[in-house]
Amino acid sequence: MANDAVAGNATRVAQRGPGDGDDPVRAVLAAYTHDLITAVDETLATFLTAEVDSLAEIDISMGRFAATAREAVLVGGKRIRSTFAYWGWRGAVGGTEALPPVLPALAALELLHTFALVHDDVMDASTTRRGRPTAHVALAEQHIAAGHRGDPGRFGEAVAVLIGDLCMVWADRLLAQATVPSARLLEVRRCYDQMRVETVAGQYLDVLGENDPASWSVDRALRVARYKTASYTVQRPLLFGACLAGVPVDDALVSAYTRYGLAVGEAFQLRDDLLGVYGDPADTGKPAGDDLRTGKPTTLLMLARELSTPAQLRAMDRAGDGPVDRLAELVVETGAVARVERMIAERVSDALAALDAAPVDRTARTALTGLATAATNRRA
Image (tube, rainbow, N blue to C red; front, top):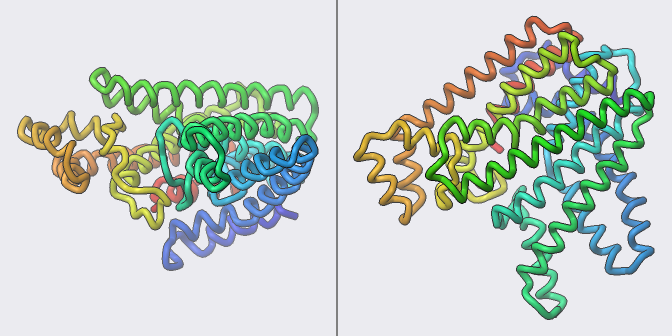
């Protein structure tokens, strides 16, 4: 059974230790997630096949549109949200509960994630994602290849928005297939809805920051990280898993998950800020330095400006119109990169402290300990 396989991998990692293998971080993440990812992907593939076939009956072009949406869901991705939701559930129920009844709910989070990614790429005018053209770029290329009239870019963006919308609806439909008591599913839905609201709030603040950088600060940048990333990447998925297990909102486990999830989620976004500037595009799947080119007020950039000397600040302002490599060097010179690394380490420590006192299943504790490090020390 998938539940046993996932738990078994966690135990083997605990016995082997985090230092084995060529890349221990990736090894830990893979060990904790491989069997779960397989189960989630199979659930998604089965669900999406039926959905695509249904839409193809409307019109042949709808079949192609739905197939593009399916590809956006199934190609790439670490399934981080499903993973944290699984361990949130597993930490509450222990090793005795069967996984299949909750698998649709776990997989639904990946549809929600695709909705957010596709819309985010349109808003950020991103051209690559996971080493491939983003949805709106690929759709614009299809428009040109087909010889359609009109603006290919506008077409690509419009259809990408629809793909995101469709993934949101699909997430709702798949969530409804979880076979848990109806009263519990209602609580799960409340948690899910709060996750979506907070994601929209974080995304709006992200857009606002790019258009009003003069009013931004480190605190506001961290607020974006909290709501755009921490909430729907780690914290809410963990609480979602606890809801699937029937844990009441006033339980000590919910408090521990809340603290752990916020800390790891913020650290996850802080690592993203660093990877967006200094990551290897071969690993991240997107160009390095885009945040610096656009002046996006990330925590990293806000800290660089806050910590810089007057001379460094003038140099950063001058470098903003030049090669991004020089601006990246200046950010390091301010001490901002070192400060962000410390912030990540502090948050991981806080997350592990939250686990220490949590009434969580032992295997789940092992997994969440490993995932806190793997999710925040990754290369992509």
